[in-house]
Length: 132
View: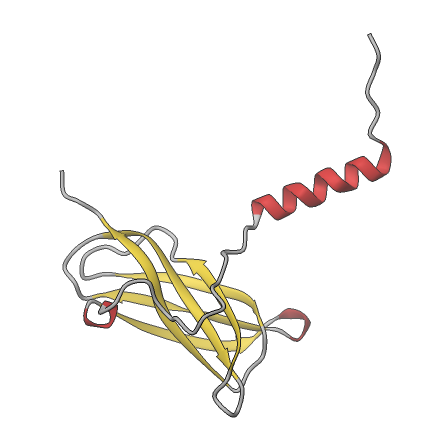
């Protein structure tokens, strides 16, 4: 039986592919849309802060507060970065880990955000947990 050898180049490719798979970036639409769920503002509010991150980036962290009375899961938030003229210069989507319990709040963090003049965070999408 012949033994397979990948060498250093093969090992690097495997490690890079594993890292890319482990930390997925969510695809963000290029069109000017800021949510997939219209009316989310009546059910949720967002409290966040912006701080310097590593390597000349910005870190946004905060909470989604659930006012709806329903448990939600699979929630994602969209961060938009704006320049001084109000034009969008960047977007990122991230998960709100663990969902948000009825009348509760849940933490989120978005790292490696491009420094910008201002930011807006919106609920991108979520699923309502059906009672069993």
